Image (cartoon, rainbow, N blue to C red; front, side):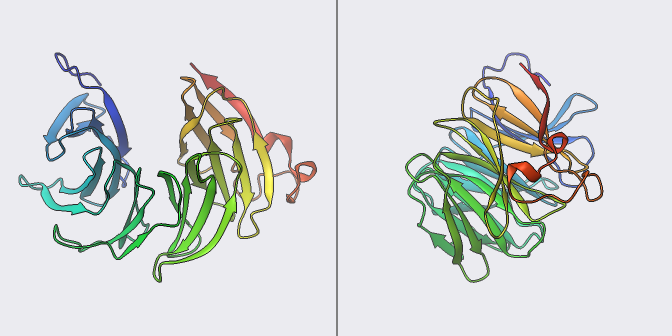
Length: 283
């Protein structure tokens, strides 16, 4: 996808939830665009941000965008007057956004070290349901559990290094684990109670953890710079990681039930090597 005569670069992307060919694109100029990928055509461009759009998350027909201007905008992509709410609580760039699987709660993380939880009905004048300040660095990594309702995992930067787990109904922190390095992204295993974390300084590795014990199953090395993003394949078996070393790496890390050669334990010696192999990388 390319627009001629536009100097703005792409700063965030998010596929529409229901599948299909629609892709949301955030730009460095503050625009939030909707594209038909199969047709290679931009369907619309939605304004509202004054600086780059850093994070995007879908909730059915609502597309939420978070920006360097500290605002979160809820866009109803069905209507011309798309801005249905502007949510304001963060004091620095919004670097993480994620809607819960039931569509009731929007989690936002910021460079101000705050985690905010917003109700789906929040208006422009609303405050967050909870404003949580336990992290000591920017909160970029957000992941809702596919196994337990109201369970959210968050990860923060170099001054914090922790993964924290929250009951979003009560706002209580359930657990916090020091990973020893910057936490850039989190991805739950859709098949088992495991969570994958990606890291920056000093080793730029991925780590697989059992939940809730948080016993480390495996460390995956290969990237040469911080691993900023992860995404899971539709079948839930392969994870792609994108890093500041300008490579994409594909990992066979989440085998569906019945695919493993034997029951996995929590130590490296019990993990089938095929399940945790790096399959390829793209530069």
